[in-house]
Image (cartoon, rainbow, N blue to C red; front, top):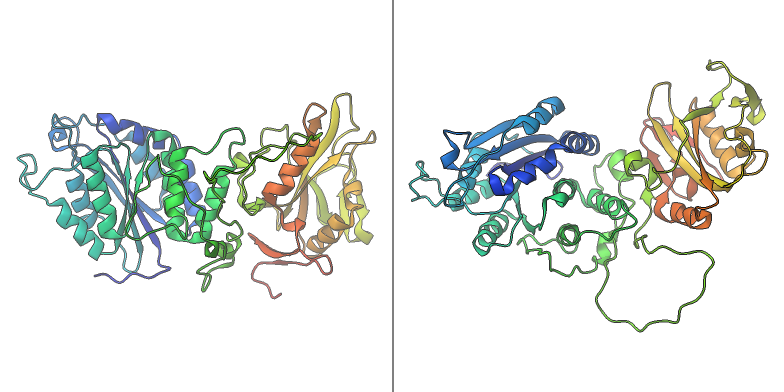
Length: 484
């Protein structure tokens, strides 16, 4: 058996059945493959991906039995393969060449010594037996599965159907390799499931963050029951190496209390440690409870905020930000160290002369129908570098408008900005105006309930390139890698 390291580089194979009944699987992934792989490569340094597409043996002359791209981190090559690989027709016996896929994964793909090895096999039927006339190489899928297990390859068997024979096949794949058998009722959740599997392999905290992000993505709809079940099986405390099935009808249980603690932190980087801030989501129980009398409230409280710790704002891409649909301004450079060259415009000294602040208004005084603004601040360590979102608030909009100078009047903001400016960083601001028709109090509540901003609590966290100390008494900021 090959030697695998607990924190070795992650190697993931995605295997897609492209026959008629399963053509929707790879079609679903095609539209999101680029974003998926970029996100995984950003969150899981060193990850490499292989992709296998397959039909059945009867497709050999009219299309292909298997096609694959070996492990790589070359995003354009992976996207090109998934985009251009064609579909297959399958066979008259409704079987597929899963047996050929297992052998290909074992003998042809380039596995690295010491890597964490994962096969995500997606399908809906069963393979050929060794004595099948079409299986000319007499491949025994059960033997191939055992050999993969000896290599340390964990199989996540994703079944998009409820056929009993297929269920036995997919369950065996998972049981033999210490993986998990996951059942889906439709293809629309497939990309989220693939991401969840990868994050589960990387670490508990990564899966917890992803679950929290998925659950908060659409505040108007409950989580699809497929995803509810998948997270229930992959979540720490519920995960079983014997690969217990998770069906669409399964009622999820609450996460084990021990799963709330950050695990496996030894030897991890500051980036990995920063991801460990979201605990498992408390699941709804079917136990009947006595109803309490309703009380009146002037603010309609939404039921869309699950019971989990706040999501780390700097870890959430803007495309998944809950308030992304607001009319946001562009990011505006707001405060810079004195002596730093900036584009033309009105600037004035601030913070005791150590910095310069934008003098013009961020937003004009309120007009009819306008009530408040949502603001976000970001820190940039150098020109052209990434902006790290560190602060967010909802504030009333006065008739005189809002300027950077007024923001710096807040001690909460001023102390933090002063420290980052002393370290040579730039501060950016963006604004979204809320109308009177929007429930301002509810928007404010959701912002502070869902998101954890680096400049918003009494903890210390890593904001990518920047270490931010979030204490009232001695807020400090240091470039990552410098001495504290």
